[in-house]
Image (cartoon, one colour):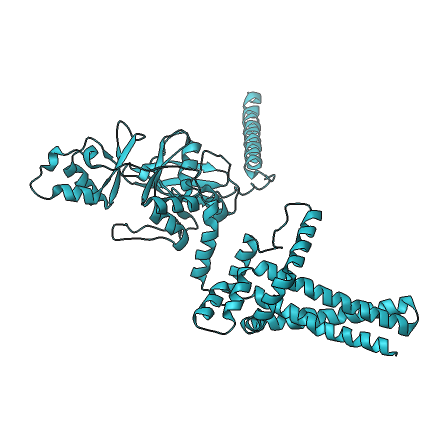
Length: 470
C-alpha cells in the first residue's frame, strides 16, 4: 500500500468518529428540554448559557449537525472506495467491498452507537458540545440555511424555513411515550393531551345548554333575584327581557347583596337597574381563542348565541378549565351520577345528554346519523316524534330506548335505560306429526258399524222362525 493510500485511509478512519460525534450531539440536542436548560442556567451550571442559545435555535443547529455528519460519512466512503479500487485493481470488487465496509461502519459506529449514547447522556453531551456547536452555527449556519432553502425549492409544498420540525401528532406520541416510561403521570398526560384538543373544541361543545340555564326577568326586584341566586347557588345570572332569546345583561350576586345593605327597600329596586352588560360569543368560536379573549377582557362568563342570534347557552372560564383538568365541583354542585352505569341485567342506565357517538361506541353498533340529533334524549325524541315523557320507549337500530326518570327545572328526561334488542330465535321447521286421534276415531267408527251390522243380522235371525211357524 502506497503512502498516499495510507494517508487517505487515516483520513477516512478519523472522519468516522467525527461523524459519530456529530450524530451523538444531534441526538442529545433533540432529547433535552428548554425548561430544564433554563433551570441549569439559573443554577449557575457551566456552558448552560451557550446551550440555551443553541436550544433557542434548535432546528438550525440540528440541520447543521446533520449536514456535517453526512459530509464526514460521504467523504470517508469515497476515500475507502478509492483505496480499495487501487488495491483490488478492479471496479466491481472495489465498489462492492467499499459499500459493504462503509454500510457496516456507518450503521454501527455512526448511526446506532453514538446516537444511543447521545440519548442516554443527553444533558452531559449537550453541555460539553454547546460551545463548539454554537461556533459552528455562526460560521456554517448560512450554508445549512442555503441548503434547506434549496431543498424546499425543489420539494413540492411549502417546505420548512428552518428544516423539518415536530408536528402535533409527534408531540402527542412523545407524551404517550413519556407516560409509558413513567416520566409523567397519567393525569398529567391527560391534561397535556387536553391542551392540544382545545383548538379543535368549539364553544357549543363545552357550554351549559339553554334548558339548564337559570335566568331572571329584568322586571323582577332585587329581593326576588337574591332569593333565586341563593337557591340556585350561582353568583352570576343572565337577565332576560321579553323572552329567553332576549338576553339584556347579567346580574351579580355581590351587586344584589350590596343593595340589601342599609335601609334600602329592595322590593322597589328592579334587576335591570343593577345588571351589567353581557358578553356574547358565537357557538362556533374555538375554545382556546375564547379563553384568551376572556382573560384579556377580564370576564368570567359569556353568553353563547347560535347562527340565528338566539340564546344557545352559557360558558364560563370554569367550563373551559374543566376541559383541561376535569370536573371542578364546588359546594353548590350536586352529586352527579355517572354518564354510563351498567346494570345487573346487562342493560345500561345513561344520561339523556350522553352523545349518540358514545352510545354507539358503548354497544358497538351503528346508529342513524342526523346532524340535528346529538344526544340520546334527542335520538328518542326524534324516533317517537314528540317530546318524550317518563316511560316513553322505542327501538332505534339494534337498541331499545326507555325514558326512565325526569328531573331539572323543566321536568325533562334525565336518565334512560338502553339495552340491545335480542334477535328472535329462528323457528324450528315444522315436522309432520302423525295424529293418532284420527286413526282412533276411524277405528271406533268401524267398530260401531260392525256392531250395528251384527245387531241387524241378529234381529233378522230372530224374526225368521216366527214368520214360518203356523
